[in-house]
Image (cartoon, rainbow, N blue to C red; front, side):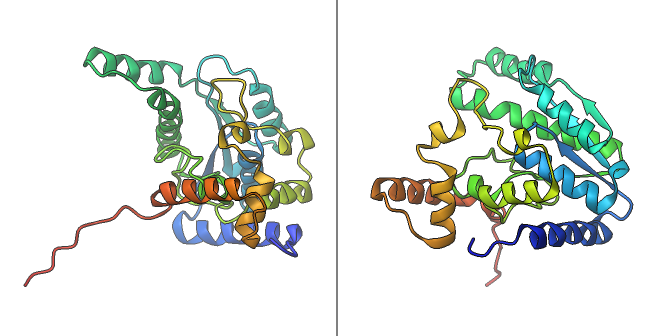
Length: 247
């Protein structure tokens, strides 16, 4: 975004969170799934500024062993927010086993998307037990090309970063003074050594520029972004409902 002002965006987001909770959860807590990456770190920081750190609950949800869980612990310690560690491995494995027992041939995409959906179920269960509202931590860039799991990390009650690109989110993180290693932590798919950008086939910097300016120098990359956006745009819309019209 041209002339992006991180200070103004951060202050406006903080006020937006306060206003949202005043209308939709007065006195409630913000429940944030903490991955240790930029998005969850910045959402948690904005919520702590808006509501006070005592009203922000961090939830760490490893799926078995999580090599980078120290980043999540670093974030909650830095912000001074209360947190829980809920290992979702048993839940994920239980659903996979139930599918296999039912005779379902489980696809690779199922194994990719199931953990985020179990994590979101965990967040809502914890939220209901702690007078909470669940934060969506997705950003515009990921949503634009469908790099989120429907009813997984794409769910939530409020989305502070949903209209901000990766570069804008990082700028807010730096304005807030968050540790640089969390802001620049390279997101990966958690299954291989490939990063999100490896899987997408282009960088977030290129994507962000295209989103904000409509300019993408490489025609193949532009076509790939357009294709991914068209395929995944339904994720950003409310579920369509049939409306009966009496004649």
